[in-house]
Length: 95
Image (cartoon, rainbow, N blue to C red; front, side, top):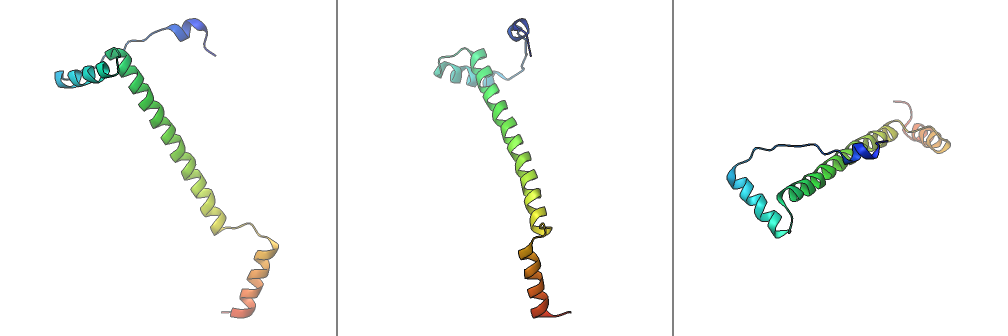
């Protein structure tokens, strides 16, 4: 766990952007009544959290999908499955 001093430490991030990009961001920040720094931090953090969450969901979905396919392709044996196989063999005969 981080101690209080580590949580209060601030890092600096420098960004190079065009004057058009800066003007656009300043206008959006003004509309929200925020400083440019606060605007950028809030929206960058929200975007980063959304991207990370989406990636986690995609990973879980892929793992779930693989488990689902495995269960369909290789179902665990049970009495009803054996009965269905015996019925199929009886009806279709040996081929």
